[in-house]
Length: 136
Image 1 (spheres, helix red, strand yellow):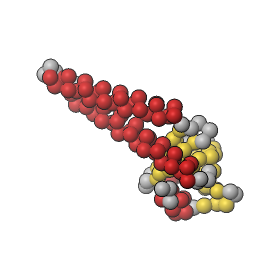
Image 2: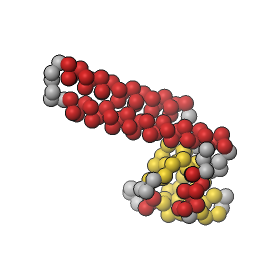
Image 3: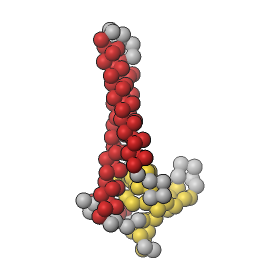
Image 4: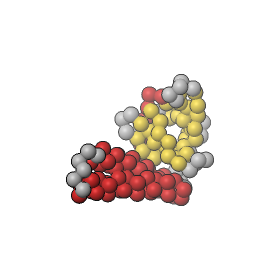
């Protein structure tokens, strides 16, 4: 899990470097790349920051003793797959889960998820959201 923290921390530093580059462009009055570098910097910081927050939630879930669930889903190529995850966050389109084997965060589209099971018992979307909300 430490490797994932390092990876997303480095991405945050890269985003900050893009924002510093934006300031350099402003000081040198080179207005051509200001918006591009500012946009790229903010987007990288936003994406990496969210992943770090999900990793923190995954750490809390592991400390709280949350159990793994199995997700059966179809990916973008319509291949059926299954993953064993600890769910850490969800919104209207995506479910974010912590992959225990890879020690990283993966996102799943809600439309692609066929069913989920916990200890052989099928659970629905509402139960899964309640499970996620119970993470301290």
